[in-house]
Length: 205
Image 1 (cartoon, helix red, strand yellow):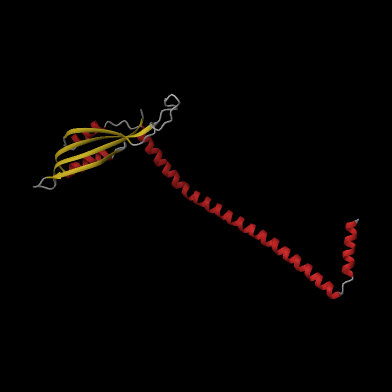
Image 2 (cartoon, helix red, strand yellow):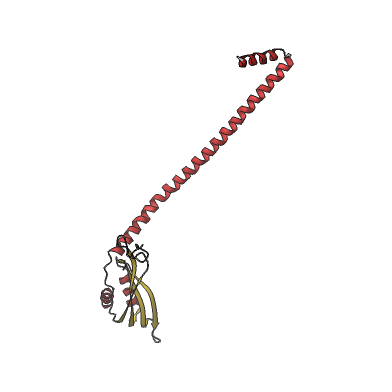
């Protein structure tokens, strides 16, 4: 009831105003309403702009992901193939080198074997309170190499020998080579010292 009386009193006061005063009050009310509408529009507009920017960012991210998907899949196939080659590598490096050297008419005079672990997955495994290693066995990447000496061969023989080693399905690489030519004929190699390596995944100790 008090609220109705207050409203009636307000309208009564408005009715007692002169036409000019009523116009001013109406203009003020209209200005306040327009300002409120403008403020609401600005707030909504800012939110819409922020939402559009967010949507655009998400769209750009999705586009980059889609563009890189094919490249990622190709790289994954290559990596999976390399991993399989390492896990199934049972190559006997000495026999391979002897066979390929014989095919090129080359004699290998001596072999010097070396082996090293390129990763430390086994060593980094966690141990329990008793100092025992827990969990399933893990594998490390291992490099096995043979350093050999060759004498009195041609550049062509050496080139074919290296190609026959590195062109295999198994991972085999010539990692180091030192060549000494003959003084009388630079196309003849007096001595070649080279290191050949193969790589495999092996359970660490």
